[in-house]
Image 1 (cartoon, one colour):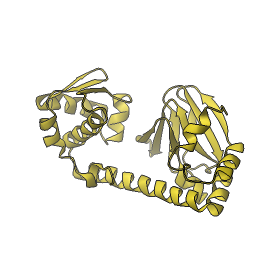
Image 2 (cartoon, rainbow, N blue to C red; image 1 turned 90 degrees about the vertical axis):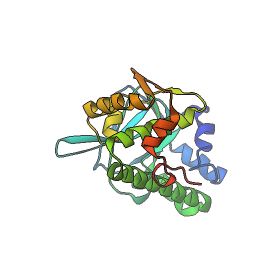
Image 3 (spheres, helix red, strand yellow; image 1 turned 60 degrees about the vertical axis):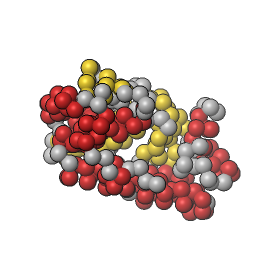
Image 4 (cartoon, one colour; image 1 turned 45 degrees about the horizontal axis):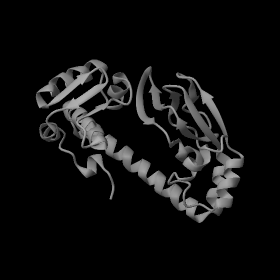
Length: 232
């Protein structure tokens, strides 16, 4: 592992409050690997052997059943996956693959559980991280069940637009087919919905999204902290 990786990992909320000695011990058993795009890092149903930390690149979390596949989440630097399975010592519920060339830090799950038991601050941070993930999943499920496809796409665009405010444009973080899967839609339905949203001040050219009328787009999305976050 490169020494330059450590400060970024240390500043993650999951690790920031733990004792330095415990962090150093945890990192002694960790190692880094570089992966090309399209590599499956973990497979659903396999034992949770490592906590993964994305320090470069991007990773898609996805699930499969009955010949179907759906995108569950996107992990970008610096982000972790899948903590719950590692702490519980249970099989992965999702698979993960690289979307581009990525650098991943792998921390052995047994080391993680050992530190969890003896470092109270790390235990609290772990619970907070898991609680945040749980609440994000609940919000996403509510959006899928309560919003129409047009409202879901509008809410997705509003969320990303808020991150780049006051700018009125941004680039989609991943391919449209992955966004469609994440939003519970087909790629064709996503394309039709984006065309419908042109009447609400949205222009999409390739991966570039420009919003010329935020008020009209927000009126479609109806942003709500209980649906979209963030928590206080």
